[in-house]
Image (cartoon, rainbow, N blue to C red; front, top):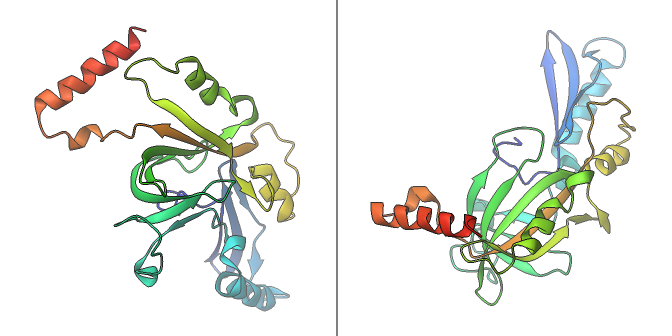
Length: 231
């Protein structure tokens, strides 16, 4: 799910094997699996019923869906008239400004770590940007934006337009905060690394290399890389 729906804050799932029920929790910091419960013994039938109720009746935000982003499906076709034509979804910043998602340019294939996703987005005025969504550790929270500020104005180098911590219920979202809300508790082991949810808005939004129509176009792009690197 995290690979196919990388805009999820976390994923809650359940498994049944040999009559043993387990709960599984995934976020960008790692995985937690519950102790098994036999579905035919003691409280097993009750827990099985609660599991079914959790998956079918819970608010989608409690199942890990991020309220600041929405990817459209056939059920919501035509219900977002304010989006750009052929938009595939929308995303909001902390000031409630809406960006239409035109395309998913790239997404990480890893389950944990940064979980980076790059989108092509358009604002309400029709300006196009690249938007990077990722989960970063505390020490690297401002690292990328600091570098982009340092290279501001260099030809052929992407320019920083805006950046923000993604907020959830009025506070910066992080994996430690998610765990505390769901009574998972504080993780003291060295393997757990708290990750903050960040978004970076960049300009311009270029085409992927795979979409270049000619060899000359491709070589021109590589030439631009060299010019930018020379600075």
